[in-house]
Image (tube, one colour):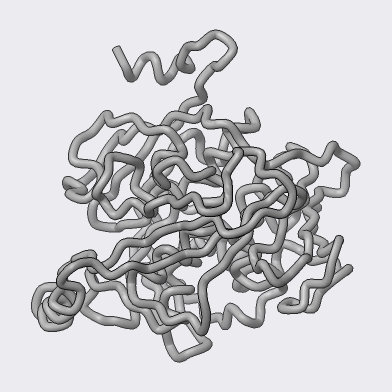
Length: 368
């Protein structure tokens, strides 16, 4: 089962510093080394936040079993439903449960992937940081230099496709509009009806999408009781002008009561009750942030208390959003879906034409 990208001449190289965690400075890494063998990169990207949560001893309160969760790939025309299972503290298993359409990777129901994320060519956190830009490189957008998300590492990950192309700046404007186009049942927390239209940075209440994409897996993990050995600190992916963020968990009133209710209800009827707030705080700068963020600014992770794009959906569709920002049509078109297998919220994406102050033609049709 080969990835559709296995023949692409794309490489990742660590330059500009020592990557102590991966110990791969100066080495070139192929696409097949950064994901589990045989697994689609898009599937691995959408699974990473759940893998991180399990790896740090968290669990998802909406599941009966604390060691597994169902997640779907971002391609709504295929709808691959995957069951992620934590086997032990190092090893994971992904089983294909359902497929709605024809998977371009030729996956079949019952296919199983077993892997240890620590044995990949780069750490999964670095993979997550580079993935949206790796997509752009695959389709010839240019070269990118991405900062390792670990603040203690000064490694830079250079993404190239073998051609001498211009190195591109990653900090983006907010040109893409996202429409909730379909759902199998109401999403009570975020999207209660169809045809809602969101900006990209509404998922993080105004935080830069590139920074929020790096932060999202750690926000989710903390929200669902992951245990980190120290404060969770991350760098945004801009290699030359980046900010350092701290992800902070603040228990809500009745925190312990809510946790008790969730624990007691899980065997009978799992309840996804939120017991904490997650704050993303800017605690440092390397260079000058192109968005103008200052040390001390805080952004609240949206757990449904404000109107905005579902953060899980943002994480799933952001690689496609980034392609559209670069005028590249995503592999399955300008569409995407939430990783939640029950609500099946699907989205349509369109680019805002800033020069004329008008929506793209497709989006104008939606608004009629």
